[in-house]
Image (cartoon, rainbow, N blue to C red; front, side, top):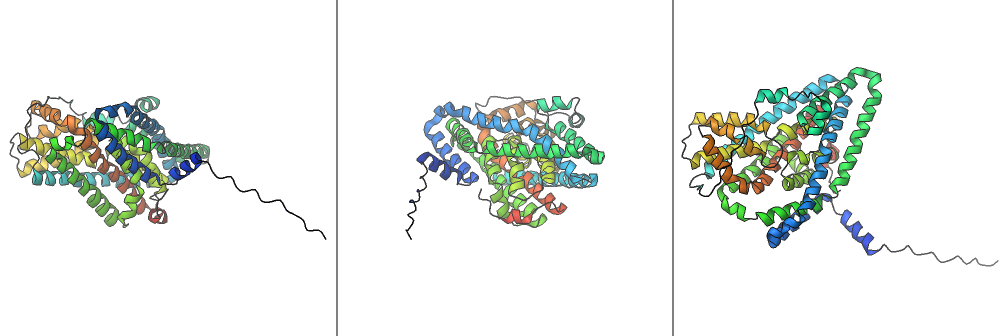
Length: 435
């Protein structure tokens, strides 16, 4: 019997250096890549200075990619989420709890802003010499704002980015699918499939986030830099302190720990992507696609709850803005020597809680509702213009900081509502999110 000689096994080809580099890059959790890009971008921006504006187009492309997804994602996720509830009463239950929580956390954020600004007194000794007055338009009448939630043309509302109108129409479509019963099942499947496709596209876009965040931060630090904090040091300290209290104590401690009965650490670990995108873009609406993605994938929030609570929160859940408007009101009163009574504080708290829900989810949106609150305590339009003109050159970095509580507000409330409604996978919430 002759021994059979087998051919030697062909060794597996070693991956090339480019393939190894890609494997190494995508093997790192996305939030770590974004955080690293943020730090490197800050260093490059400070070293490069004004020259960093040369890469501003990269950040703009990233923001445009994110904004491109907002309206189709809002429509598809809300319509499919409502249709998946099957029972219209569930939608009412979720809606009432969501609105109640947003009012509750906004009131706590305003209170935090008033307390911190009273203790630090950022307006005492402030000099408006050299400030260029900047008049702001009066905020929209609340009655008109509610009327315009109902769109004349749903397609036009989508084209114009009218988020509240799109939400209203999407809820009606979802409710129509439920009412149609078996006849609506093909539409329900289409909406669910469309929402899933949009979330996959969000995943693709998020892979560009490190580059976008790097460019955005480099430009901000190159054009403004740490000097922005020095110019308004006490106000910056107020915003930073207040944002930490609102984010960690109110959202992490009260909403997640006490009301949702969940440990806060997995919450903050799971939403790291959304926090860093919110910080770098200074926009709650631009963060919405990322927020929906992390709520479902990392926090275990069901699609019906995530798609109902988060789009609404991106429009009215402005805890960071509410806190900031309260601080600016006290800043103006202290700078102009206006003596405030306890009744004035109550007026500021009530007015700010209401107008904050009308803040546009865009950079520096808070400044455009400031006039309504300052008017309530006797600050003239001319004085308001001086305050806005003084703040505006430094506002971008302050805006980045206060956008973080806006983002954590939406996600903490979505977590709590999902927990109360039994629409949450706690195992997913507690699992490490190292994707």
